[in-house]
Image (cartoon, rainbow, N blue to C red):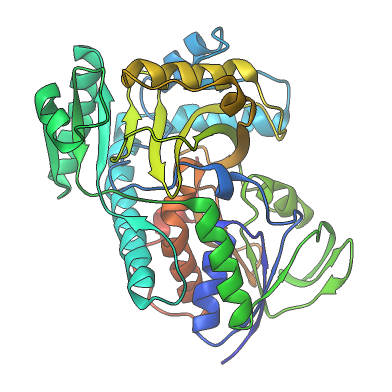
Length: 415
């Protein structure tokens, strides 16, 4: 039966939900507080990452975070602040950073990433709109033996989960990407991963959705929500009132703000990431992560993107030039002939990732609101998990068996 559905949030998650819901015959409206020209869906590394099986809340990250707090150019930074939501999240994050919880999360993260990768490939094969999609794998480049050993431990877990992984010495690395001119000891090569050009895809995706009847409305900031008998009756925005049979919360880092309006606790903190685009030829053809620096390198359509940092400092879009310079400096150390100039660094942009305490997204319905499906908290895997999340949300709303067990993503789970 066709339903009227309003999706709150127009990034990759919200648009993916719209895509699968309209395929099932529903009348879909997407609203967003922005004008659809910026945000995490535009500035991310474009990775589709079955290799990323370890959640952010992993053992050892607390100690590293404390050390990195005193380094303004560190890859992971937490700004201490006396804020109840942050303190609650930080406590849950600490409780989640155990070997037992990480091992339980690994196969779940791998499975949802593979579902999403296959859905992207399916979308590409249908030729419903044009976008770049390359399945070239992912290199984890390391400069020190210690980093290489740490990354290989992750690789061994990935191999147990069925992923194909190779350990490449520098000579082998130069053979598979001969023009890149690497300056490192070696790399762990995950064959499972793919990559895209996010900003191009988002524009094409949105245009396609509008052609098939999805309403997409910009600059609709939510002011209030009418709730009765555990159901949303209407949403009042700056411009109009929205009524629907079902609502989907896919507002990324802003999701907690909406949840509070209906007395729902969705613990999320905004994790800021930066990107630098280089439109000159870099001769890099295979995506890579620079292990020690935690910087992502992606060859995209017409440019190479360098992205990195996880800065937990609340919702703000201030560009910290120290962090931008750190990304550029790190990239130059791993590729001999690479030089990122001042103009390219000044053009850097940032986006806010919605981070859950345990590194798993929130997907599904809370018992506290029967006509709201939640789809948020994807952290650094938002782009990777867009289609899988959209399909799971459509299955939840239609009461179908889901493509995978979504209990690990339950919005009401305890931390």
